[in-house]
Structure formats: C-alpha cells, structure tokens
Image (cartoon, rainbow, N blue to C red):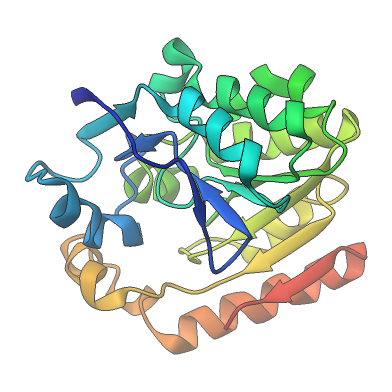
Length: 250
C-alpha cells in the first residue's frame, strides 16, 4: 500500500447527488473492480499505481472543514463520493470520525455510504445528529463474488449485520444494491428485511471499463442488460413484500 500525506484546498465540495460531498481520502483500499473513481482519480492525482493500492490522506481536512462550515449554507453532506470513508486506514487515523465531529457541531445533515462495518465504531457520534442516514453498498449476497469484486470490503454478512445494529440504534438506514453482481436476489432481499428503511437498485454503469475483468473470470453472461433487468425484478418482487421503500435507478 502506497500512502502519502497531502494538504487539501477544499474538503466540503458541491455535489450533483447531494448538496455536498466530503472525501477524507484520495484513493481507496477497498479496491472495487468496478469503481468509477478508478477511471479518473489516477489521472488527476498523478498516481500510476493500480486502483486500491494507494491512498492520500488529507491531513488538513479537519481545519479546512471547520473553516468552510463557517460560511457554508446548510445542506446534506455525502460521506463519501469517491472513496470509502471507513476504509482500513480509517481504523488507525480516525479522520472520518473527526470530520463527522465537526459536522455534528453545526448539525449539517449527513448521508454516509460505506462497505465497512467500521462505521459501527462511530455510533455514539451518529446518534447525536438531528438528520442522518447511514447505508451500505451491497452488490450480492454471494461472499465469494463480493470478495472477487470488492477485495477490501467487509464481508456481506458483516455489512448486513451492521445495518441491523444501526437500525437498532435508532438510525435511518439504507442499502445501495448496485452494481448488481451474480447471486441470489431473493435471498439478499430477505436478509435485508427489518434492517433498512430504503433500498436503491442499480446496474453496472461502466461496463466498457470492467468487461475485461468479467471475461478474465468467465462472467461475461452477467454483464448484460438482460441480467441486470432480471436481478432487479427479482429484488423488487421480494422487497415489495417487506414494505421497504424502493428506488430503481435504471
């Protein structure tokens, strides 16, 4: 793992999905094979190393955020858009936790999206927000498939268990089911029952960039519109029985 300390000019940035996005790190140890950030982050940072093998730590992030919050209009902050805020380095550095503590002081609404059960460490902070939603990206219930595509993520079982614990703690929770990978969608939907308030479903949106990885592992038949549509329909069929709010993004 290649890591370096950098200084950021801005940490609270405008987003087209939420009002703001906040990325404590540049690069991501989770190393998802399908991540859209791998298409542009190396080009803008000068990194030539493979995605998942480098992380830049924004050492002045807390100071910059504190300064930006003084003049920022209140809005929802997405943590994070191009890295996992709870990737392995966070366990030691607690940078995401310190940034959340600053957001808490100003009570900016927060939406956290991760693949790491480390988020449970910060339940004490999260429960003090007036408006917060915490979610996990889950692409399949198949552990072997998840390890293949998301080598640095918590296991699927750990993610689902964490959702349940967050829900029990009184937090609003969601699951982002995408990009859909091979697996049993009925089983996945059933495992989420009672653990989430909302579910988002999405397909693989960057197929040209990852089709080589599919072919390398003999998975081409799972990189088709018909596969994504079939998986979506099965998920919706089971999720509708649980009464959870569903939003399909394709």
